Image (cartoon, rainbow, N blue to C red; front, side):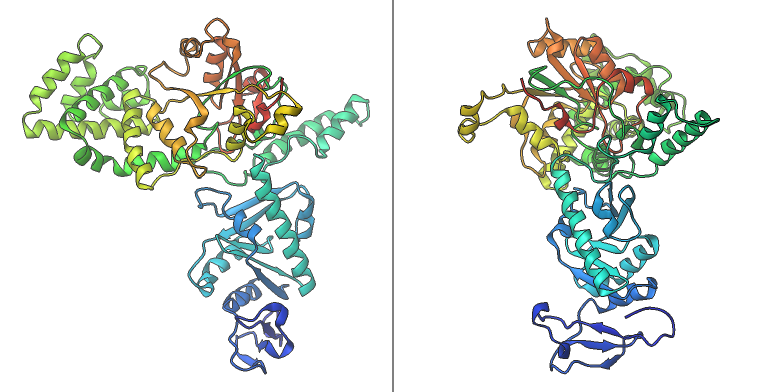
Length: 558
């Protein structure tokens, strides 16, 4: 068939419920471009394919399309599930040779395949299909989540070849993710780059007048272009750090267990997507906060939490935006709360203040005011992502309900589970051959240090798509140990891990520059994690610290 206006093309449609290998010419429907049946099949009692409305969507909007193929390929279906949130609207693939086989793309192009949500019947997909075909005109395929793929071409031969090429790419994307690789990222090495040839020519003295300026301009263009191709799946609130993801680190990456037996990991931006925290965990708290305060907390818990949140605010610098908004009248809060914020609360007077507030709470109006104070303080602190100890404890209690009810499921990157298995070392009961052929690598002790409370950390790792991962961890630390941006906190952790005299035996991995600097100041080996959507790194940071895109880059041997 074909879509051009007023042309006498016919659309040949396969029947529903007939095995394709058993089809004969007498089984096929012949329709015109208005979906009228011109010649019904000679075989009786056949129905048109349920996909017929979708064929016409393609023919109307793709002028060259002459054939559309729909498959329930396992690789296509799994490719739609690479994003654990199942909210991604596209799958991005780049730097694979088979990109040449899908039309309109080359090896180093970024192929963006739209993903639409499945529906109970295929005819209900028509409006979604039409929308994405118009939005992504260069792509000759559309994925349907948990279903399959539609592919088209200028002939049945081309449609078949492109369908096979797409299937190859989907299989590659799924297998790459199992290796901790992102199919949507430009590889840092192992592939041809024009700038390498230019640099090589410059070193040999090859060039022409004005080449330096030309190369600088071209390199600037490349840096701009590097920011246009986003990772395969990126959180809605994440930042564009594509340049960092291309970085080939100039510093030595430590290998475990050769260089260290203790590993200290941050969570957000290292083991777990920032988008999961910002787009799932935080909104869950804000959505359920009112119910939690009014229906899940006792009066004593509300008072304790209010005092703790006030201490969180008081610990901030005087010019912190949260503190300024609360004290300068930007936030609509009662004068009584402002007064509490202005009176320092410390270890010496906390007990007396709590006793006074409990006495005051015997009146209903006071208790209602305390509840409102908690709501106001939580919203103010979360608006600027303050890592307050009491705030994190409250969030952890709320997330506990979400995890237990099934509303929340913890996210970890695809490289995390194989990395945990590596650090645990071979199991002598299942890897007997390995232990006979070569001595087993000593296990690496993994600990977690996050601004989230220890309870929240354990909840996240206990409720992952891979099941309960908490048995892999040696210790957990949170801000009760100390501020993550202060070296004394890392000194205390090294002491707790039995490495106080030799902090260099601990490798710390985080996406935050201030944290890795503090860890290095304490004597630890600090590594920067670069994940899709993390904040951009400074040039100084990229010069001074080893950078990894996958935790599997830390896996080595003695």
